[in-house]
Image (tube, rainbow, N blue to C red; front, side, top):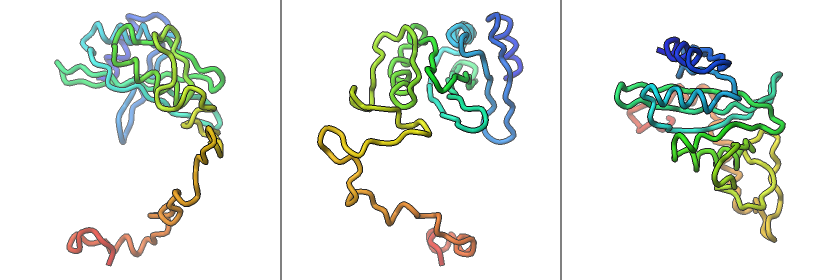
Length: 189
């Protein structure tokens, strides 16, 4: 189906350059040109993808640093789902807003802005949704460093960090995992 949807996108949206990312494990997706995301979403909406479920983003800092924004669209009539992906530069990432197509995009785009700094052009209420308006930085960026203090409050008080729990699972050896038995409610023997 993804090949058909990519062909549909390329036939309806000039310059979308839709390509299928086939996955052996997990979900396949379709990458499109970031500058065409609104037109691509409109084309899919016109072809039964009438529900926007999620807009999310990921910050990649590998050899090709970029922010990837993913849109999960659904066609509940034909029981189909597609993931669209658009890659943006880490510096000044911008996309066209799709609030005009789906009202649910309002909060989803605001969250993506708040956490990753993606600006959605023509968004009707482009402001933070999770962090205070004067918060500095974007918490889901790989290079984010949280302030030690905010409005006179310590952000990460040491007595609230549960430091003993942070290594849970990391300290577990392969032998103790292999001794896990359903007979003792999943506890290690």
